[in-house]
Image 1: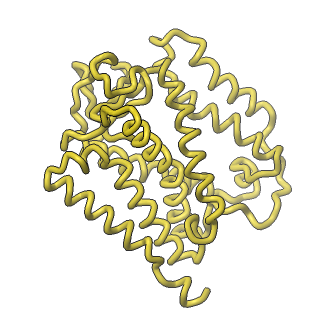
Image 2: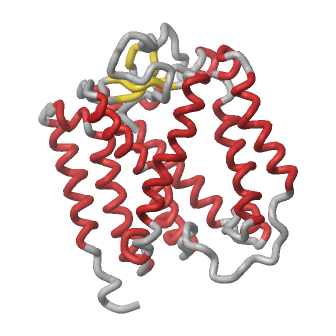
Length: 288
């Protein structure tokens, strides 16, 4: 590894500056920062973590995979919109405090959604290299000879993603976990058949790092999502609230209140705000 690759790339410091500026804006009571907190902090986070990965491993999405990175950002929007579409029926979350202008609001959604996969993948690379000296989102150098996941996985996945849509909303609202798991079972066998990297195949090869890195990355990003979302809520900015059934609410949630990760926002009705997406994706915090 050359001395150049050992340096922090310039965008590392830009990302750190963005995070500090966002926190300073929240502390100062800026409504503009509060409204745009989610896309701002996640953009800074991605720049910062990518720089850390580049410094440690000598490779990263924004420095050595420049042709693939824009596709990842665009794919993140498209993939998250699939879950937003599911949410029209399941009604598990809702957005509040978003910009009232439709064009500005859609831009905010797109910017926020574009950061979801990059944030998870960048975090997975950081965790994977720290624990296993590997970048789990990089394609393996050698083609696996292990058998891929069976077609039974695809059948199970298809059932899991289809059943919630076929059930009444009152029942389907309990099954969002089936949707998340269903796409894993559905897509991973397709990747294997196409010769693309497969989590199940790498697990059979004895490489546990991709799955474990992604699980840890999901946990880390989940905590950060809820933390920053709570900040946006407290500052009166754009945030999401959970509309999951009472039986699924942790921490003894009652009276329509959402206190996931500290959020105590009152549960809104789906028709109470023209600046929200009625029955489309919403959570307890900011726009993402």
